Image (tube, rainbow, N blue to C red; front, side):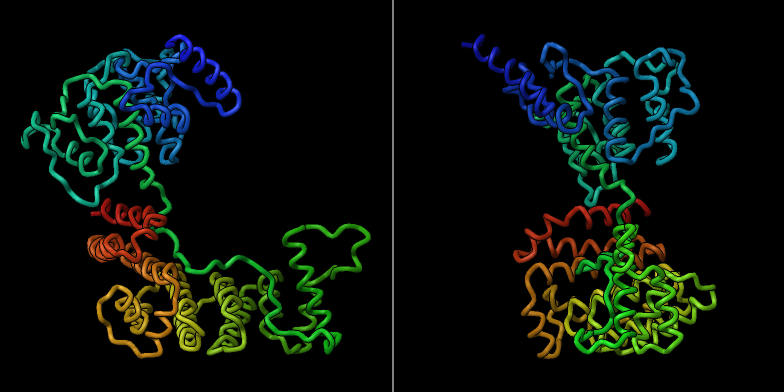
Length: 486
């Protein structure tokens, strides 16, 4: 019976290797680390089995092998780069060793991100690359690339005291749930780590170092999606269009086509405007009534000098003041497009405030406010935001967080009509975007505490708990960024 099972597994391995590039190992089917091993070998592709379709889970792993799989993990997660410059300060490993380049690059990256090296752990003249690595050594090196835990937990290993030499490293990994020890509450630091334990440890650190990526506390997030498109900025009745209207629409349509297609094919010239910007400039000079549309597209696609760009930007802002004719998406498009040209942060801020006042709904109000945050951070004028804080928006957040904030009945009716995910996103993005201000102003501890309070509220909320699962990495990554700064 066993022989038949092995034959079946071998056949299955051959087919899955060819079709799905997955390998099945004969010796781990009932092993506690089975899923971790398959993840490390077949999904992450950072570990390898043996040619006889075994993994040998209880075999020791060498120092060179362990650092290699850590290095592959960090490269996969894009927190390490290939850096083969310099050389290792060990007498027993050189370019002739299969792992030399991995160990060298791992060491170089440690210096860059943490100003540390593997010499702090393996501090002898020799590296002993083929020596089995101990659990203590593995933990210490993993701790260097691990992120700061959100909550500090004291380990309860019975074979380690609080005077243990590497207590900080163990506490860090234990708090991050990267190490948990054995069932009898021992850690066994001097024992060699097995291949199975290494697979488990690698998976845990792989998930943790994701939060080292430079994607958190970087950009403002919006509730709605604002993709680039080509609006006319005016409602046209095609049965009543003038020749100028037709020229304008054709020019804009051509710009849209060129933006996505990039080329007007011979024979199709009559369908498009061969010189759309020139047409728009002519309309503008003849005082065509679609001022916003002509100025926007000339600014975006024309070849204006610096002074003209500034004037166009100021005119566009003035046209937007308390504008109730353009739809919200058009307003956002214009405001995002003139970031680089506008030189007056106070004027920009006033215009957005005026649009928030006339916005049709709460979600639009918050996205306009988020745009204001993004702009003022870009211009390093965050103090303008603080001086003109929108108290009503803060009151809405307090109400959503069940802080019994008093609001107008009209606001309460609108808030209660929002979908659950809209309410959640308003809270989440308001807090994340507000955190950017603290981050840019180096208010790391204060920013962490405020964001962590929101994180705790969302986790404990019956209404928002499931929604948080889909977005948790964003808020955890931001919190860990704050934590790493103080």
